[in-house]
Image (cartoon, rainbow, N blue to C red):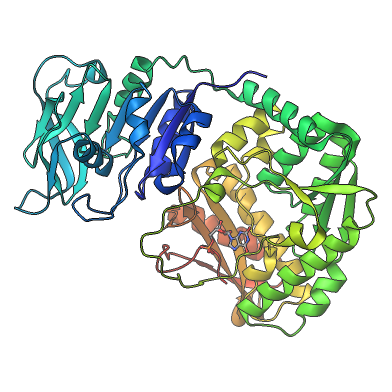
Length: 518
Ligand code: XMP
């Protein structure tokens, strides 16, 4: 099996470290992020990086006990790029000086101008004069380390770009990975080129290696996969099936809270198209029975989470000899972030997941997507031939329509909601807007309103439409549909769906709202 050229990102806790990984993956370079306190000499030797990047971070190198890279990083003989805190820690460790204060803090946009001789890192940079960059630093380098020269300056950072050309050490005060450094990607491109990367990371090679890894891990044992119909678990299932065929059984827990025709689509796709052994656990009665009369959002989530685990366990225990549980865990879920605050964060919503299930059932985990970002999972799905319509689907939450039906859940309301949601999504597709939107759905409101249709009075449910743009679901903006679109959609829903006589559009961003209503 080929081993990729590997780049190591040592994380000092910046909010944007993951973006460095993104930029590198876009250059077909394989990289991993590891927190500074987990990177020791033994780790460095086993990882064998071809180059290292020190990320930014919130601490101050002037504070005793602040994060440091292992000294060995500097003696491996590989190129290093330090960013922001990474630059400062590099200077400090190699004999320079970093200071706080005296009014040189810079936050936001700044212009960096060239200085000194041409530098391979800056090839095709500065071609059109000073470059816009994004700064975010309180401390600054006040004396560069021996061997370093200055190659770029900004009003607040006389040492904005420095390098020790002999050792291939580069240090920049700004963040080339963020959007507000418009030509930052070029710096990463130059860095990996000068470090000798050939760009050997591709989805085709990932697929091949992942299959070999799954075979080696699983041997001739049985694997169970909880299939939700979402992109991650589906791609994981198809990949694992390609690796081990009928040693994989998927369990699809149908809680009766899915969208129109969704269960049929999932079952037919996996059973008929892919021939994957699939258990369709049709447990709608159980879930809807236990949810009867429950209107508190957290109680709903807890009930669904508990039942999901119970049901999954029940079906999984019927699969003889199962030793592994497959999960579609992604890279952002895996990266251990460096917590400087250490404080507990507030639970806004208890998210539905199967955490704790493997221990409970004594199963080992198979997680073939652990190294991928969401869009890379989509690319892998395409590589595996999954239909585009399926790969590009908006996220759908584990608790399903339960959290799109504020108040008590009834079968009647769910039926109305399914139909209305289908019309709404159909409208979005027809207008060519589906791929511009992160997530769109309808929610049935716990209220009835008076209307008039024909000559008669109606007293029916009100529906809320939601559509948001987002990059990661953490923050979101409502989608600016045209009035024509909204008017046409409301008319269609009211005409086509019995039980709805009023439609609202939700203009709340996140924060202060959340994406789902509950
Ligand atoms: P919120 O409503 O918290 O949603 O702004 C952010 C994203 O997460 C999805 N979501 C969930 N996904 N299990 C999931 O798998 C859950 O319990 C859950 N709750 C919310 C939501 O659809 C959005 O994409």
